[in-house]
Length: 115
Length: 111
Image (cartoon, rainbow over all chains, first blue to last red; front, side, top):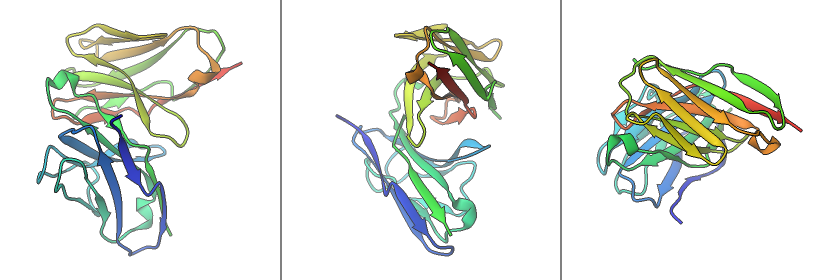
């Protein structure tokens, strides 16, 4: 069955370190998204990609970067981790056809703690 | 800018009750609206997607409706069960493949 996986599922790191969160999907979806979920804020979009070599900033992109070298993967990098980036991170994907049918599917999430 | 609101933030009901969860959005120019379920510590599971041209969508005990003119969607859960306890999120698709999420309604169904 097609799926979307994230690794690691839990990560503890220190302030200032570079961290990369992996996202891999086997749906062959062209669109991929990264969100963070925080109490009181809900889900907020960090970065997204419409296809290979395409990346775009979301509403909370400062301090994060992504790159898309193939269809299946969209790794999220925290350049210099800050305590404010402690959060749960979700990856999602969708397929562009009729825009009314672009259902998004989510991964299980990565819980990141920055000390 | 699209904004999505879900009220109430939390809801507690006895088992067997029929209930309605509400979702409102500010910009009626949506392509679809999705309802998700999230269990504690888990990812989001897609429940229903209603296209902008549709009025409602059904899956088992769940029925979602969409009224673009009033900027509202509702998720109706029939004969609620303790296993329905979760946080329910709605999200509006604005046509750029992106979703704008509400903050969710935490549902507790008491045995």
